[in-house]
Length: 119
Image (cartoon, rainbow, N blue to C red; front, side, top):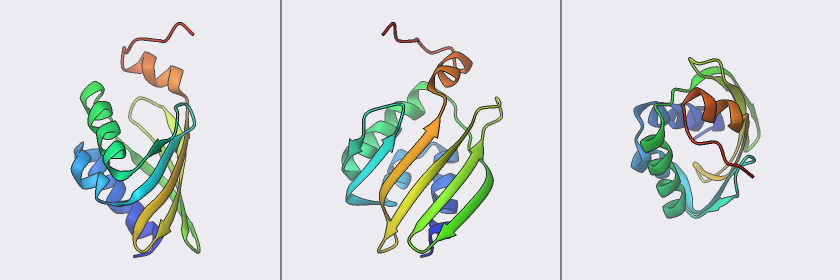
């Protein structure tokens, strides 16, 4: 599966709020590093991360662009509340082996009326 196709499947699972479905797109030893947070290592931990996130906020990912270069895919996205970001996905054997995401965590927390850390 090409990176673009896999990212499209990822967005579908994300928008469904389906942590199990999204986790199945990752290698067992994948790393997901949203730069506003510590890296998450392993498919099980990634699934738990998505379960927690989907339980905290109603999130929607709207694709603006998907770029592809060899085993990398880049997703430029927005959400209905105006937040924008991008994600970099490294694909190996039709699974995500590494993901890094850039977005404004403070804006996200404010938009979803979630607690803002004091530190």
